[in-house]
Length: 413
Ligand code: PMP
Image 1: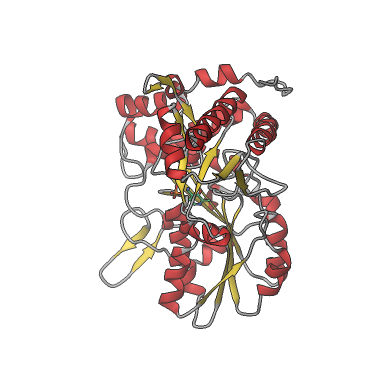
Image 2: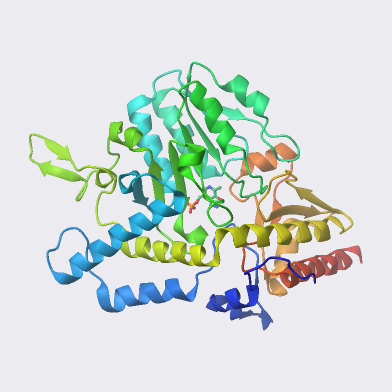
């Protein structure tokens, strides 16, 4: 165990905020290293949802009674909390969705409907999550457009020369991830956006794996769209965010029709609500939005600079320990990374390793992590993935390493 040099960061105290981290599995303390899939929730978020359902619940926007007005106010405050968190200019730019996947699908339907034509090109990268591949493929099928792919090198870093060459007159949008969920790579998104904008091509950034690890400033990186999920940043599941620059969203048609997204409905003609409501059809997940805002406030109270500094130490420590295991191959060795480790051990199927780690109380993920093309790049069927956040500890990294050493010995026999 090493002592962290990070100031203002007491990981023991932070862990007390997360009730589930005190749970045992198979009688052993839970070591939760599957944060790339979903993160655990602090007490304050759990209590907020209990408070809403126990004392305050009411449908938003449509009621004139006390509860409805109170809930509407809390929902709109949540929107402002999201705005501040990602440093957007205005709340009109913040659309609540069900998550990253539904936000990307919203863009593929709305932007796709308006701007994509036959023979146009859409540029994504080889390291995208399936949810930033398949919706674009479906759009290409609908429109007879073509999907182009920016490759990455064996370290897991995007080939920026290839990117420049792939951008063409035909490119109508670029959509890439800020951080890879299976390789951990932190992409140079600001540079990617700058290059695309030189050709007036808009850029969508998949923020699903950055919000819980680093600072996001949509104005600084200058993206046109930014999407993320609440459940990956210590908030409720079923809620997410689509950020879009106001001038971009203003021009886009709604992609779903229903209540709340309309201004005036007649059988002859319907007019639509203003931003951001024209993209929020039906009763939204308002409890989730308020829970998400509570989670974002919680992250703010921990301090994003503390999180970055602590996770950097945890990353370096865990990577060096894993690299010291003979026969272990780490996939994703980019210079800039989040605290995600994808690896394989010689002659051991990842599923077997994952099952044994589980019996030791250690929750990891095995398989393709919804990034099959990443696995194809390395010609492997899957990896073991340990993904850490700021409530994970150096002791837990040691426990993972110890578990892997034990598995190695078992398979050597
Ligand atoms: N993109 C990335 C990079 C992800 O890691 C994930 C979730 N693993 C998604 C998109 C999809 O997120 P959700 O399932 O919350 O919509």
